[in-house]
Image 1 (cartoon, rainbow, N blue to C red):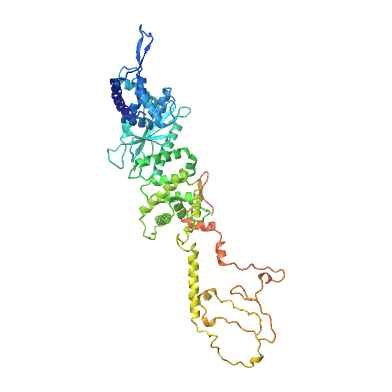
Image 2 (cartoon, rainbow, N blue to C red):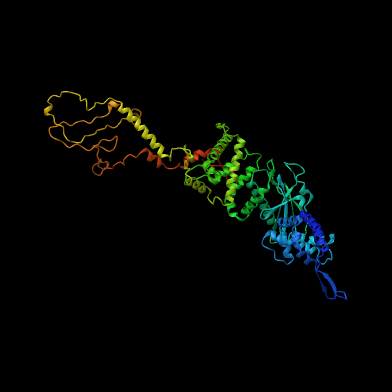
Length: 592
């Protein structure tokens, strides 16, 4: 494909270089020459000016020209410097800038090679530029294809996207119809951009496999653009292809109309877009793992609006992140873990929860509960951006191969496994144990103060009383025996607080002989004389394991069984009223 912009920049450079080199000769510099031997119809020796050497020796002055830098950048963007130098028998440098600089310098030397002056000759310029155009033509066994981009705008005239290029239609030699494509948004005077790609033909020279390779290349470019940033961009309904030495032929792409709004790149987007396109082209295994989610993502973008695409984008998130994992969290928290920092993670979680409620509303028709957040369109757009972020990070390799594990590891590493519960980061429900202990100590002190308010007899004022036969009573040295009856119900025990006068007192044991008392029980709510649970059953009878705490039962509860999971998601997959099976000859109703 002939680059018209390159022709324009080289024409400007040739005009400026002519003035600079002519000025150097006028200032006293001489063009070197050599004497050629007689021959080729000449009887005398020939004067041969070495104009190309003079251009090469004064390349420093030429490279300072603004037109030289523009021509060098155009040559580099068109990727023509390497083939051009190889055709000339020069080894191209590895650096793209040096390669383009050498190619432009060689073009000037080639244009004035053998001339006695530096006047601008159209015939010399056309002959030198034709050598560059030959490198831009498809080689034998290659096919070149172009398709206009609908809604796309960017600064500059060309950007390379690893296997394909986006160029301005007025900067290349293409059919006139290719530059007059539909513009769903923007001004009519804005330029049209094309996707250009070259692929090899089939081994037998056919176009069947080549057409599929061209289609995959263009689809990869559109996917890269949509993953980079939001916007309405797509392929035009028609494109053009040609082989070496043949004319352009029109083809149908079958692409639909993209979303309104357009798609604009800025100068800061170009480097990131090129890096993303390189990752899409090189790491095809990552793209393959994300293929189902990518297809569902683009299916949503092909719909009329964000609300229509909400179900597609949520389904893509379920493909990627639903399932069991180390942290045991749900889809909303995993999406938040892979897209947001710790400070804004809960906001992203609420967005996904609201989107799921909105999806349920769209399916069932029941209005979702209003929580004061954004409207449906805003929620759907936020979910689309969250999915775009996850897919982009997955393609570039930032999240590894297992996105569920990456999300759970992020939450566990930051101590955010509370995402499915009511706790929030920064409270004292889990970590601020000192605050809890302080509150308990203050509460116990307040209770002690209330108990001390009761009047107690002092040792200075003993109370006098008489006991019958007091001289015959002896107090034993046995240890006190505590006997606390089991409460009738746990709820009653918690709700009723014992009064001060009901505090059990230590009974005295009056006996003629001292007896040995039993040791007090260590467990509250159980009699001190209770035997060990291993001795409760006599003989070889079967015993029961001691009752476990309710907290242990909650911790050891098994995960949700398949039937319960099936009941929760069954509304997403409605069943038909009639079950039919199709045989080889005719349909018949399945036996119930």
